[in-house]
Image 1: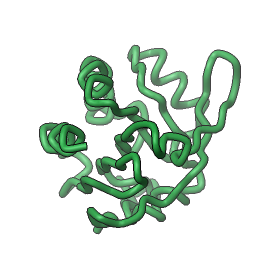
Image 2: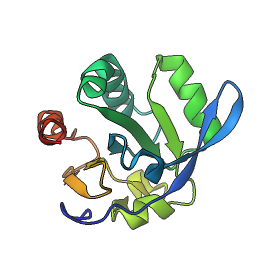
Image 3: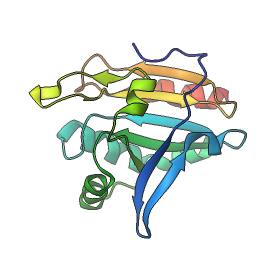
Length: 158
């Protein structure tokens, strides 16, 4: 079960790959400034994950209008994430949780995905400006997508 609504969001600093190189992204940097959507996904270069991130990229303006930043988190390396994003024109900030510490902190580890090892489950969180989780969902299977209407509704409540 993922961390519950009303819980304090565990802070993290994860790597993203930019044109300038590797960059640290820290969740708490958004506190007091904007809401944050965290989208955990199992693996880059898989069909459901690609579709989810391409669809989210297409709707990024909706999240910006709601005053939110979107971070997508997987256990892939930042270099694999960058190649995947470039191939699929994904514009989200992709964060590498290679050691699975953030997925464990949010209680969204998916054990033994397809027999290849533990990954993050597919999950969505809305973290308010105050650092408290306003929405929490882990999908029943990695093939199921989060309820994005519910994510946007939680953002709209602020």
